[in-house]
Length: 441
Ligand code: SF4
Ligand code: SF4
Image 1 (cartoon, helix red, strand yellow):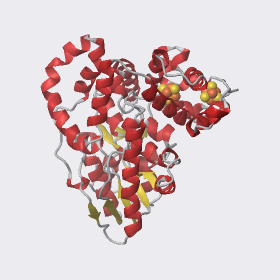
Image 2 (image 1 turned 180 degrees about the horizontal axis):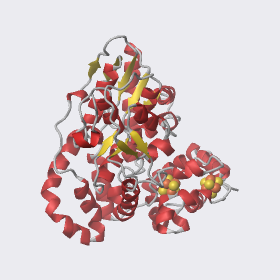
Image 3 (image 1 turned 90 degrees about the vertical axis):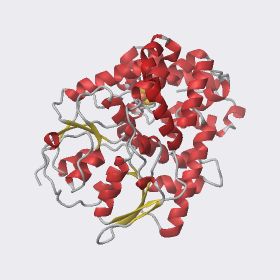
Image 4 (image 1 turned 180 degrees about the vertical axis):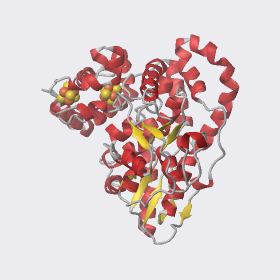
C-alpha cells in the first residue's frame, strides 16, 4: 500500500513503525473472511482491511480520532485472526495497538464510556480490588434486567452477568516463594500469578505448580509480579500498560539474576501474547529495552514448556472426549496450535476440534463488557460449534475464554493444565464430575 507520510511525521518512531506495517498491506482482503466482526456484521469497515484504511487515513492526516474510527476500532477484538490469514505478513497487532493509543490521546469518549473504562482499568488489574468488586457485583445482580434496557448501561449489565456467584479464596500459590521440584531437578521456572485469573480460578496455577514440581521443576513466584498489562494495553492506556510491563520485567530480571530461570511460565494465553511482546513495547526505553527483550525471549505458555519436557505415561487413563478451544491469543497471538492438543491426547483424552476454531469466542479481554452484543453473538456461535462435537468437557488455555464460554455452555469448561494435572495424578478439577472424567487408575 502506498503511503504519504511527511518526513516530520516519520520522525515519530510510532508513526514510522505503523508506516512500515501499512506498506506491507496489498489490499487483497483475504483477512476479511476470517475476521469475526466482518463475519458477524458484514461491514467492510469492521474488517481488518477496512480498519487498516481508517487507521492509515487518521495517521497520515495527523488528525485526532473521530467517532467513526473509534466505533470500528472499538469493535475489533484484537483476536489477530487476520494476522494468521494475511499472506503479506501485515503486523495488524502493532498497528491497532498504535491506533488505540492514538484514540486514547486524541478522542474524548462520552462520559459513561469514560467512567466504565476508567473503572475497568482501576479494578481488573488488581486482585484485591477485583475480588472486592466481584462481591459487590452480587448485590447488583437484581439490576441486570433494568440495566440491559438502557443501551449506555449495557456494559454494566454484562459485567454483572459475567461475575461468578461466588469467588474462591486466594491461593497461597500466589504469594512470593519457591516451590521445590521433586526428585531429579529438571528445570527452574518463574510462574506469572497474574491478576483476574488468580481471583477467578486460582486452581489453575495450583495445578500448574503441582504438575511442574511433581515433574522435578522448581517453580519460583517472584516478589513484585503483577498484571501483565494486557487489559489496559487493549484499551489504549499505554502508560499504565508500560508501567505493568516494567514492573514485571524488574521482578523477573531479579529472579534471573538471583538463581537463573529457564523460562517464565504463563497459564493465561492472553497474558502470554503481551509478555512475548514486551521487547517491542519497551524497545524505545533505553533502561528497559534489553531486559524486556530478554524476558520476552524466555516467556512460554505452560503447554509449550510441558511439550518440550518429555512427560512420563499418565497415571490415569481418562478416555474422555474433550473439545479443545484454542484461544485467539494462543493460536493467532502466539501461534501455539499443536502442543495443547498433543499433550491432552498423550494424557489419554480424545480431543475434538470444534468447527470454525479460528473464530473468537467474544471474550477478548474487556470486549465482552464493552461490546456485549457482538460478544454474545460470537459466544453463542462458539458454544454451538463446541456442543456439536459431542464432547463431555471443554479445555482451553485462557481464563477469559473459560469465563465467556462457561456463561453459555452446558458442559464444564476447564483449563487444559487442570486436565493434564489430573491425568498425571493431581486432584479432579472442580466442577467436573467423576462420570465425565471416567478415569481408570
Ligand atoms: S484482530 Fe480480529 S476482529 Fe480485529 S480486525 Fe483482525 S480479525 Fe478482525
Ligand atoms: S490479508 Fe493482509 S495484505 Fe491482504 S488486505 Fe488483509 S492485511 Fe492487507
